[in-house]
Length: 166
Ligand code: 5GP
Image: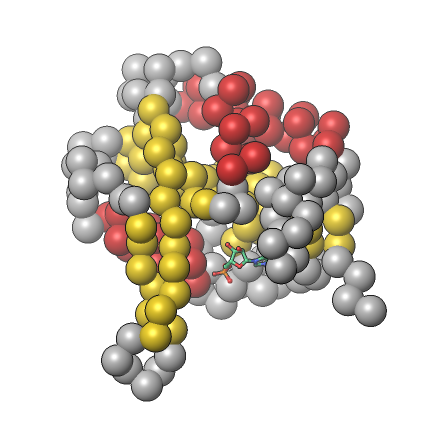
């Protein structure tokens, strides 16, 4: 679906926008594991202003409500007040994960909060969410590669592929 050179070009463009918009703001990039690790690494290498990095993980667990899975954030720093935070995601599909994360981070009163995602599926989004930085808008197919997995496999592929479900 998307080749590595196209990804690299797009990552450079996003980094240059961030370099311009965040100069002297020492932004804190928060990557969402596992999927965003390659995008985060490549983006971070192209950012030339002062900045910091951290990673979180979102886990689902069965809460007491019968409504099903309740999400939980692991590894979130407690010092986000006044910081310029950029959440870095691999993909925004329904938007549920990203919206949940942004709400959790907002509780800590960051100075600004933006969302960068490598991939965005506008046709799948169910929540009122529009990422601030988008690598590529894609059709609602299941994709693998460049950090994204199918059943744990495929994260090491350099390009992004549509999974052949047959
Ligand atoms: P959400 O539906 O909450 O926006 O997306 C939640 C998570 O589902 C993403 O962070 C990602 O881990 C996974 N996901 C959604 N669409 C895809 C896809 O096309 N490929 C892969 N590998 N993961 C996906």
